[in-house]
Image (tube, rainbow, N blue to C red; front, side):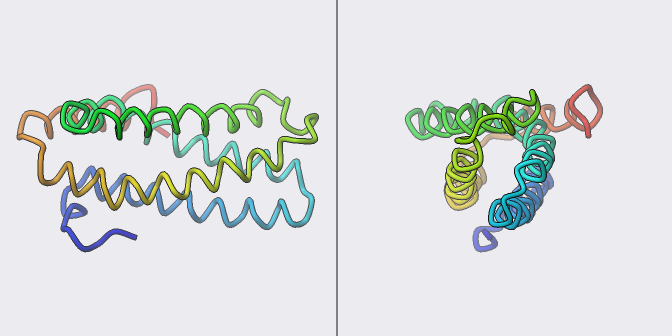
Length: 156
């Protein structure tokens, strides 16, 4: 994915990028399960994706997005709305309703297509914009959000 702007030289952006890579890897497992008709396996993988995205989303929404919202309000609002749409479908795997709903596998795959596009928006837009626009204090807030995830209740 993104390697052209140098934003991965920042530890938090590098970690967010690695989490994106992990999600993309898990989506490939999801595709195989979907092709095989393995709804239970799809639910397992969806739960794994949700475990990666929970802390990841916290760092973005508590650190990165607030720092960029002043300059890019519509784009940040769109990204946050996409987070909610993706989380809602993934949550169905956690609460056990997904396997009982025959529409869930296709809705999950649609959400994962959205997630792939979302990842590209972040890596090609948000991360370089953060590199160019965030002040030292704003980066400290992003780092604090990451620290809360790593050392706090949201850690894996």
